[in-house]
Amino acid sequence: MTVGGSRFATEENSAVPVAAPGEFSELELGQLRVWPPVVLAPMAGITNYPYRSLCRNFGAGLFVSEMITARGYLHGNRMTRLLASSQPGEEPRSVQVYGSDPVDVGEMVASLVDEGVDHIDMNFGCPVAKVTRQGGGSAVPVKPRLLARIVRAAVRSSCDVPITIKVRLGIHDELLTYLDAGRVAEEEGVSAIGLHARTAAALYSGQARWAAITALKQAVGIPVLGNGDIWECWDALRMMRETGCDGVIVGRGSLGRPWLFRELADVFEGVEPSGPPDLGGVVQVALAHADSLAAFFGEAPAMKQMRKWVGWYTKGFRGAAALRADLAQISTLAQLHALLGALPAEEPFPMRALRMGRAKRGGQQRVKLPEGYLDDMSDDTPPRGPRSSEEIEAWERANNGG
Image (cartoon, rainbow, N blue to C red; front, side, top):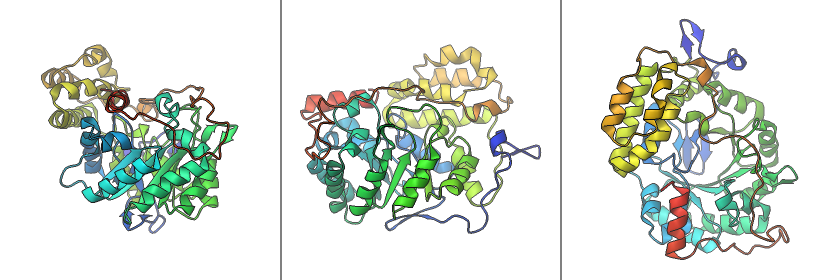
């Protein structure tokens, strides 16, 4: 990004060169080809259709839905079905699924394939307590035989639609599982594995351990996607050069900054990207996002979601500080338009905001697991999870912020 002839980048990225011709290749996921090799991370409460389409408009790549549960989908849960839905023009269509029962996962994958989904990602990295305490998310790779059963069921039902999985390093530093997960993924026919280079215990704290991405790439023969600390387009280039990974997954760095995908598309094409928008440009993007959310979810639910989004969009801008309390209380599109319209449009994008944390906070946690879960890690019995319609509805409401 250049501003007045100078690159808009933090010091650590000031000298990172754009991609050389032929330096990087398309990301190959089965029959699917992705360029640039950039994936929007599936994020609960974030990567619904309105945000995916907004990011897609800024640059090509792969844009994955937020996590949906196999049982919620099979039971016809309204919110699950809505979050899994798409609209004409979303191609390729990518859905992330969560499930720890091979039968449920197989049936769900078969149904999604019948709907015309182009790519399915499986969540084996979620560190959230309500998921891991039921033996899901990052708890699953602790039991490689169970992981293999679930993945096998998905691949067998996929009819050659590419299946990928996403994992973390492990539960904590004394229980690392990512290399075993990579072995299972390759053996069971997965098209690629994504690694968030932190443990479940670490949540989003500290620096992502990119050296583990290198180790995984050296250990498997399938594509590896690196995830963790992609705040600037230059970070994606550095990660791929340092680790040898085949693509990058971008999560928190894109929150309130969907134009990051334009910058990523530019640098992978060997082009110096222009600078990010000023506050007036940011407001235009935020309002377009709000309008799209309202059309998809309805105005009241959309404005509830926008309370977090406006904080991310305006993060670091001095001119927005006085309005943050009011923005956190918006309930109508008219209120949002009026408040954002009062901001100083000419205020430039703040350099300090490039690497400011968004959404998930740092800090360590003690990972919650089912009682006795570590007693026999060769056990491949699926954990119970929510089963009744009432349990599923409660789980979906909690997971999706409803």
